[in-house]
Length: 106
Image (cartoon, rainbow, N blue to C red; front, side, top):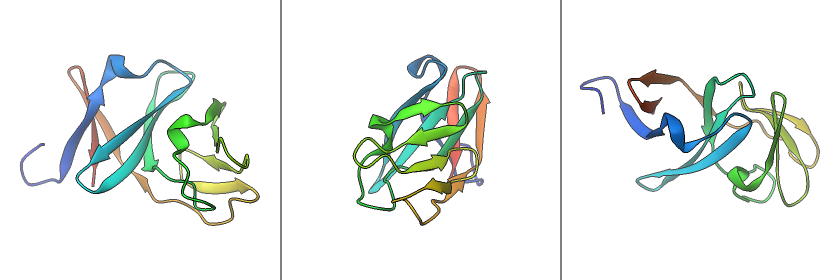
């Protein structure tokens, strides 16, 4: 954690390969950290807004992550829901990479 800014370590850079997602639990909260196909990192709330399924178990395709249960989709860059049955946007979080660690601003 970086002092005074509410940045918390989510994982190491090597923990997620391009076009993959990782479930990250911080305290009582669950996030999904996504590494885009071009290597950028993004974070948003970790459960689908439809049935609270872990999105990290879903498929990353382009800028979209698909819920593994009912195939609702979200734009992981913004948390915006893109396809039913997911109809409520998720909160997205700022991400930074320092050295070998990925940080989320919570």
